[in-house]
Image 1: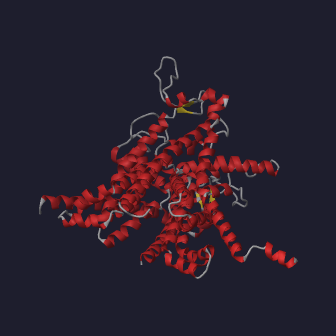
Image 2 (image 1 turned 90 degrees about the vertical axis):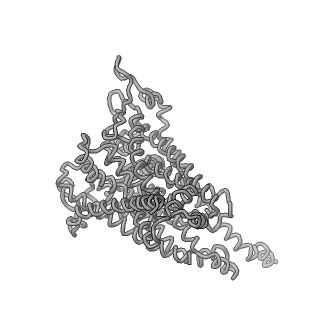
Image 3 (image 1 turned 180 degrees about the horizontal axis):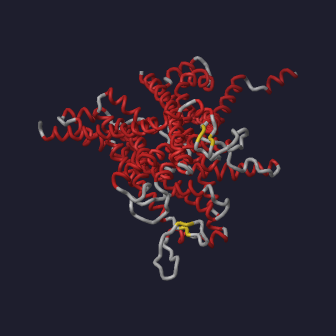
Length: 298
Length: 325
């Protein structure tokens, strides 16, 4: 074998090793979490509340809080994200300056650190909108404090780029011929959009929703400042209630436990549940997306 | 006559649907500006809460740009130092320890993530057999789906003990542990963007190189990588932006001691972790509160610039290679 071939073989192997190492790291993260937390998964763990100063009991309030929070976030982000993508792909003229500005803004929004979203939620939603709402409603402190609604809206802003990018990809996958055929038959632009384009793009839009939920459910830094609570005796029952959250619960158990050994199984259990949630969502999204892609290329 | 005038005042049917279409288009365009509005509102409202730092007389007594960025003499006769102790009788507000901490952790993270991410991207796009490629890509993308709080947990519980036992470190949580855990958050960013850039290189480049007798690795390293260089660099810049802004990983794995030290194995505090750790106890409207928002403004501006640069480079490479944006 020539030295050139040998060198090529060596570096090919090295780059393959890099890929392998990354996948290995992912494997270690998963096996460690599952090994530590699998035995903890039981009906009591899923359905109970934390007891004995967070050293026993379950995580139901955290599961509930995460679910409600991401649900509210999804309701807020989907219409805005989908409509923005529709504007970018269906309505904006080619080489439109306006569309370029929107695109750059969305790209940069995706790069804003999550803790800055937390500050934004605190400064804008809670101290600006919330406090002014309280003033208008008679001065009682209700919305000018961290709570479910503000945390959900903060996360909605954070996940907006995810939805926009996925929806645009979905719209791209709808063949232009379909649009032209519909318009040629006399349908208006909005009729074509509603009856032809959107039905075709639905799986892709769904992918966007799932990715947004997965991202939103795992973010902790923003809700740290906008409404997550260490422990609550009651489930959140109003829009301005604080809430418990799987990610925040993980952080609290990992860093602020009075009894590390006693908390460890609970911590691992919480991590497994959080990972199961985000991985299931990601997995479904990957499958949906690969279907959309293969159809677009066909 | 009455019927004639009512017919005349009603717009013809064609005009009416045109009007409706215009309204729908206008509404959609308006909604599309939410993203633009969001980015503007983020800057405005984070800056607004930081503003008292520069105009409020009480805050001006405690905080100034010089106190934030220049070494301060705290005791007569002692050398000037950088100290972050915002909650004390005489608040010390030097941001330098936090900047140094952010720098240390990000550099460690990037030193691991950039080579691994780029090499893995090169392998996936150029060298791996097709079937393997279809497995590697989604698997590494799954890593992006691991919440950062879980990566922080992994750094705290697993990496920290591993490194301490292997190297006999004094501090269990330090910049090295945080940087390594952080690299797990950055790798998917670098990998995905770099892989996209490499895949955008036209097939003719590969065919020409292989036809001239180059090996696959030589083609990948000397032809494809240089052709996609701006995109690959953009991937690293985006990764750096993520590293600087990432909060939960460093909050959990760095040890959080705001000390001014270049040592990688010392406990470390970053800018982002400072906001997360101290916002909970701060008095709303106090100088300390404004200071945390001021740190947020700086994080926003740093990542904003990095993203603009990366975005421009990515668009550049796509345009140059004749692809569509």
